[in-house]
Image 1 (cartoon, helix red, strand yellow):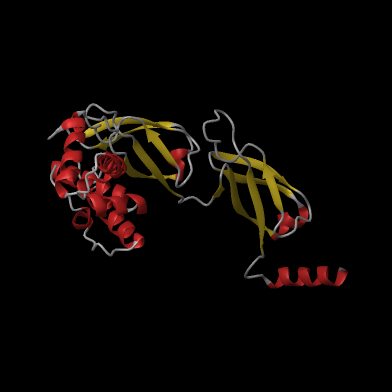
Image 2 (image 1 turned 180 degrees about the horizontal axis):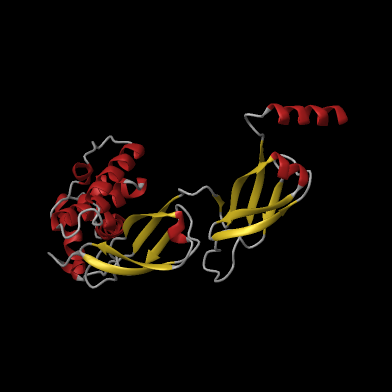
Length: 294
């Protein structure tokens, strides 16, 4: 297997910080994303390489293994176990020879079906590498359960995105990662969701919060007002003498609960009283009369 320089792919030095790697990955992933480069095989290949590189370098433990074992980083633990076994065998046989580069090649050769010798001839099955991907969606996209097609390593994968999925949440698509070694199982595809909220509602898990303007007269005298919810309008009765900052709850008018069909959080409304502007002389006189009465 040819050595792949993941640092070079992301365009960062080996001394790069976690923040440097994350920044480089996001920039390149946006540039080469299949949705922005339809039918572009070169961009598709580049996008895969970028994801593979990020999978390794964004994880401190994986990065350490990669720096030590190169393209065989996934099997570093197996190598260490095999190394210890060989050292033990030599110690019991009275051999004092150290562990050489040839031994390193022999062990990895047996793992990948290459050179074998003695007890190293049996091939071991290894699970394939997990792939990581980021999917950006608008908040309205995850209000309802829907299907979406993703392109991963040139293959189209049809996935169902449950309503109510949260920002930063990760779902696993089993068997759609890297191929296994020596007949081992494929890895998985891990999709992290980035939810962009362009609405006026603030989301708190399955609850929503919104601020609604209320004119002074309706706040004082009460009445009816049409209020926007996330999926339509409702009519509310405003109580007389409603104070600025008053909060009301609309039960079941929030966001869908993840994987709980038909269940919703609540909508919390905060009233913000708007004072009238550009008062006429008559309005000012009436307010002065009210002031004297109070």
